[in-house]
Length: 243
Image (cartoon, rainbow, N blue to C red):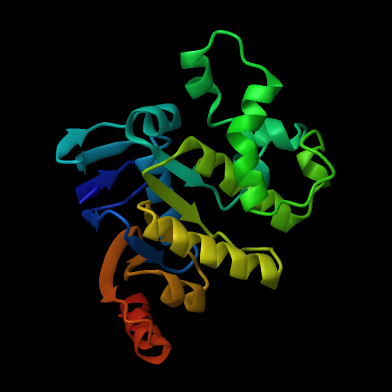
C-alpha cells in the first residue's frame, strides 16, 4: 500500500473518507458534479484543510501542507481538470509549462539553471507524448486543447511522481488524443505509478480503473471491484449514486 486515507473529514464537508491505493493500482473516483471528488484531490495536495482522520504514506502518518510538499517530499502529482486555470500558465511557453515541476530538482543539484538543462529533462516526455508544437518556445495558449493536456501530463512525468492524481483527463480533447492518454495511463500504472483517476466518463472509468469508489455528497457511498464488464459495473455504480 502506497497511501491510505482513514476516516478523513475536511473543512469542505468530506466525512469518514476511507481509501487505499496500492503500488501500480488505478483507483477510480466516480460521481456526479458536486460529489466532492476534485475537492478530495485538493485536500490530498494540501490545497484544502483536513480537520481529522489520517493520511498514511508508506506506513507513516503524514500531514501535507502544500502542493510543493506533496511533490517534493511525497512525490504526489495532480493533473487538474481545469488545465487553463490551474494546470498551465497560458502566457508562458511550452518549455516553461513542462518544466515547472522539475525546477527545484535541478536547482538543488546546480546553482545555474539553463534552458538546455531544462530541455534535456522534459524533452523526452514532450516527444513521448507527441506534442505538436513548432518549438518549445511556442506560447502554450496557441496549442490545441489536446496538446495543452499533453503538456499538463508531461510536466508530471518529468517530475517522476510515485502517486499521480488525474482529474478528468480527457475532457475537451479529440478521440485520438483520448485513446493515447488512456494507453498512457495504463502504461504508467504498469511501470509502477499509483494513480487516483477522477472521471465523469463512465466508459473511461470502467475501462481504466482497477476498483471504483463512488462518491456522493462528499462521502464514499460504495465500492465496485471492476472486472471491466460495462453492463454489470455501470448498474452497480448507478445504484450507489442513487440509493
